[in-house]
Structures are given as C-alpha cells and as structure tokens.
Image (cartoon, rainbow, N blue to C red; front, side, top):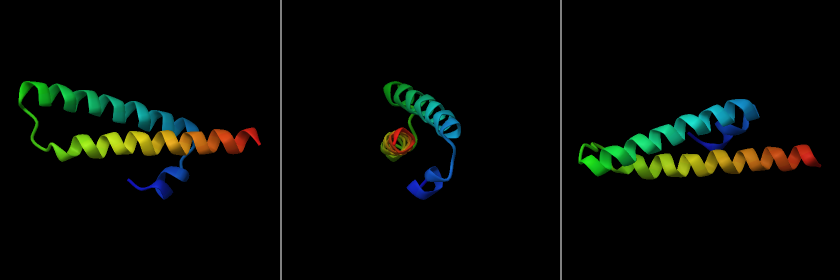
Length: 66
C-alpha cells in the first residue's frame, strides 16, 4: 500500500486499517514465536505500513487543526 492510496481515505477508514494492521502484526509475531512463520519479510512490511498509516493520520489531524 502506498501513501497516496492512504491519503485518499477518510480518518475513520485509516483507523480501521490501523486496527487490522496491528492485528496482523500480532498474528505474525505469534507465528514467529511458534516457528510457523512462512514469510518473515511480511513482518517488516506490516510494521512499515503501520508507521505509514500513523503518519497520514497525523498529517490529516494537523491539517484539520489549522
């Protein structure tokens, strides 16, 4: 997912996306701990997607405050 796709979403949609990504990150950490993780690179991708969503949410909040 790229930043432009995220900027087109509403803050509520972004919060929903953030919840889904955090659930996925939890599941990936659980799989890694049990040795069942198939794609270790997905952990990094999800972590970066979470950061990207947080950044866009902060940008939208800052723009709304102005």
